[in-house]
Amino acid sequence: MAVQYVFQYRYTYHSVFWISAATLADLQSGFQEIAEYTKCVTIDQRDAASTAKAVLRWLEPQTLWLLVIDNLDEISIVDGYLPDVSSGNGHLLITTRNQDPTGIPAQGLEVEVFKSDDPVNLLLL
Image (cartoon, rainbow, N blue to C red):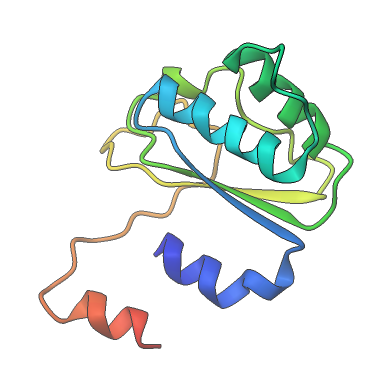
């Protein structure tokens, strides 16, 4: 579903970033990749946590961005690592397989398990 959303609305955004949140290391590495790609932070002298925080500060005034946080099954991983989307400048899409998404600061949408042909049909839309 997330891939379909990104594909369908990719031209709505100036920037789309996709980060895995399977582990804290993955999340921080994703922020480091954003820093390298956008050149918004020099990462030579920063640790991973500082770089992530700097990227989040950089995102705040930017417009029309989408950050996908993928595979967030343990909410504590993103504690302090989510961008402020209250200004409406950007959007945050979080994916999880966690049946109990309590604590994830987002409006949820449950996706049922697909039948055998459903994923192919969805991607062909």
